[in-house]
Length: 358
Image (tube, one colour):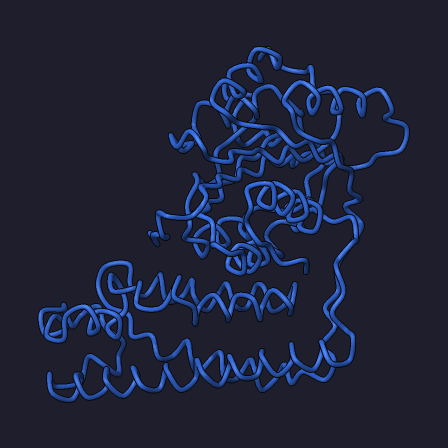
């Protein structure tokens, strides 16, 4: 939905996640930190032309004929629907068959990989267990992915007593040209508020969300998604909540929602709101005349600018305070987000792209 500048380094990232019982909780590592990836990429110079997709495997509901693997979301840049889908996936199950070959085959056949010959195309294969299970020939699949320029970076979720399978995952890294990493699903990253007034920030953010005036088929659903994803990440990761707020006030999101928001529609065409089906508007807007609605849209337009500036100031103030007090440190904990971003940083630096260290 949201296009990026075509001048940046093309980067396609697919998270291929084992959702079996031995990796219970892994999905939380991604969905609770999905905005960390936007925050990382947005601060690279020049900003890469990046996309993120997700494949999951080891759930019976995905079907035996599919090798219990499924494309959850194809490569793209509209992270709200991605986050929304991820939060609908149960984080824990009792059992599941881990067919790594089928998962990689799904990455090969169903992901819309870039045709750019200079693109960085990687799969973060995250899980554990025997990689030889299932009908798919994993070596042949890896050869085909390699021919497409895709590199696999296995991230092994540690389980006691699985030395043999760890060697199998190491072999995937060696044959694909990637690098093996390990994580513990029990590891969690906790935000350091350092005096940040989170309650005030959340109030501003809610007011900001209310400057979006939905319309059209699916308009309310998209506005509801806007608010739901804020609630999800607020509960799970307050740092990610700030990153998401920065995303919403950035050029990646601002003026990009004309398909469902009257304010952005007004930016695009100041008279287009007059042709909108009033039945699809909020109860407040339905009652307004055209002149009243126009005035209301303009009011919300300037209110959004004001709230954006206030939220940006709060975050900047926190970052400056953290820096002055030496609170900013490079993250080193063994979690999916930290390890995968570290690997992405290494790849981008090798392409002469300046990347943030935290």
